[in-house]
Length: 358
Image 1 (cartoon, rainbow, N blue to C red):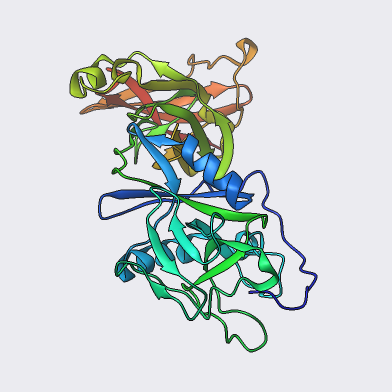
Image 2: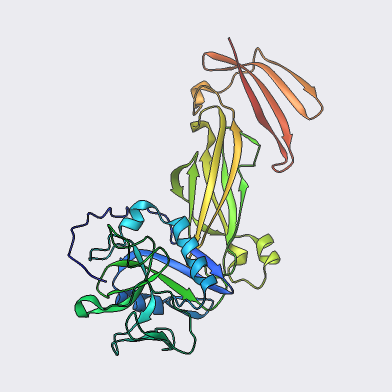
């Protein structure tokens, strides 16, 4: 549809926008690509994608259940700014997402791009072909004579009367509009697996330790990101040897080198509770997050140099069960009581409590 042209201010996505949405329905995988493109460019990009050896294509919708599943997933995922970045240059003032229908070859002969199946013939007074599913608004109308590409609406349109289509219905639009687009694959996505082994959940950490774990996907791992208390901190190198994971998943390439690890100075964090999260992204764009909440115990100094090496000349120790208590350890000008506990995972005693002695 097309009425008088209106100027629309778009809120552009930042480089740190949410990752592409990936969801499944009845054995098919869908990926929402959040870089706006024309319909032709979206179709070409979709065809260049693959999942499990299956090529992608602009989504085809064949039932009410599938249309509802697509609408539900898109509506739950997209922010107002993202929706504003997918509004066509007409007067609808509503966001749309490209899907795979077109009548570019012959006006009024609407076909799916994945295999050329005809699903509609005519304008809004036309009829479906071979009983195939459609969900047009008061469309298609080929307003302006060049609306040859299919999109699904994510709001009622057009303002102010909203009388040509409602949320979830289809519209024919000019193919050079820059919209987000939905890619479909005729296969289910393999699970992206990941585990954060350290820091230990509900554990206690001090000084210098490790952040480590493993991640595995048949599509390959693109990146492993670390977040500290919700804020991005750094990426972790991927590819450490993990024979245990290789033995557990012998049929997945790269399983034996699926580890990631990096030294981390826990003493740079304040004393108390903290959370480390790892966000793993595979080459397909799927993501998984694993988190660990732990306690940091520390001396006043984040790093103790040689001149301030702990002095135990006036200290005394006691032991009970698998705990050792050291009282009045001197670090610089400050005295501390220290509690050490046996840690099975490291096979050593580690500091689990540091108490200032004032």
